[in-house]
Amino acid sequence: MTTVTARDATVLRDALGPLRDREQIALRLLESSAKHSFDPDTELDWDAAVEDGKWFGNHVRYALTEIADECRHSMMFGRMIDWGGAPTYPVPRVYHNLARVLKTVSTTPGSFAATLLGEEILDWMQRLTFPDDRVQTLVRGVTRIHVIEEARHVRYAREELRRQMVTAPRWERELTKVSCGEAARVFSVCFVNPQVYENVGLDRREAVAQVKASGHRAEVMQSGAKRLTDFFDDIGLLNGVGRRLWRSSGLLA
Image 1 (cartoon, rainbow, N blue to C red):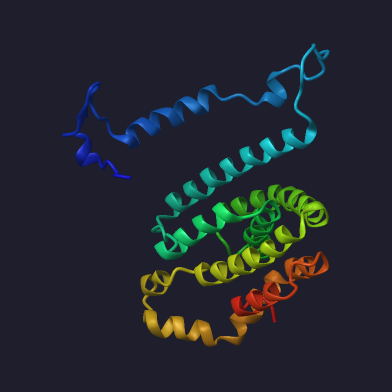
Image 2: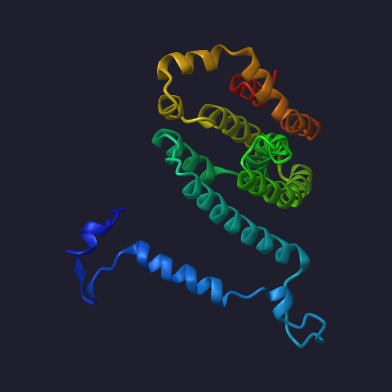
C-alpha cells in the first residue's frame, strides 16, 4: 500500500480533483465526532416494547461492545503517545508478517488464547502503574481506564476459551497449543523494541545482551504471566509442545 504524504497530496490528483491532506481531514472529522457522537445507552429508549422481528442476543451484543471498547483504547493510547512526544516503535516486519500468518490459521480458541496473552501480562504491569504517584498523572489515568475496562474483556475471553477447549475437536485443541505457544514466543521477543535503548543513550547490542542475561527481567516477565500460565495449565493448553514453546519464550519457568 502506498502512503500519501502531505507533500504528495499537493501534486497528486484523481478524477475528483486534488488530494487533500489526510491530517487536516482527520482533524475536522475528530471535531465533528466530538460534537455529533451519540451514546446509544442514553440516547435510546431501551425500555420500549420489543417489536416483531429478530434481536441480537446478549452474547453478540457484548462482543460488539468489546470491539467498541478496543477502538476507544487504541485512540486513547495513540493520543497519549502524541501527548508525550514519543516516537512510534513498530513491531519488526518479520514478526508482523508472522502474526498475520498466525491470525489466518488460528483456531477460535487460539484467538481467545492470544487475546489473553496480550491482555493479562500488560494488565499485571499496569496495575503497578496507575496507583504509583511517581508516574505522570495522565499516564496513570490512561492505565486506570484500561485496567478497569480490560477486566471484563479478560473475563469474557477466559469464559469463552474454557468453553471452546471443552467443545472443540481434538485437532483444534492441539493446534491451539502450538499457535498459543508460538504467540508467546513472538510476544516475548517483541515486548520491547531495541530502538528504545538507543533513544535513551544506551548501546543497543550491550543493552539487548543485558536484557537476555537478566534474571530480574525473567522473573518480572514470569510473574506477569503467572496468573495466565496457571489458567492455561488448568485448561490443558500447556501440555506437550505447547509447554516447550512457552518455556522457550521465557514466560514460563
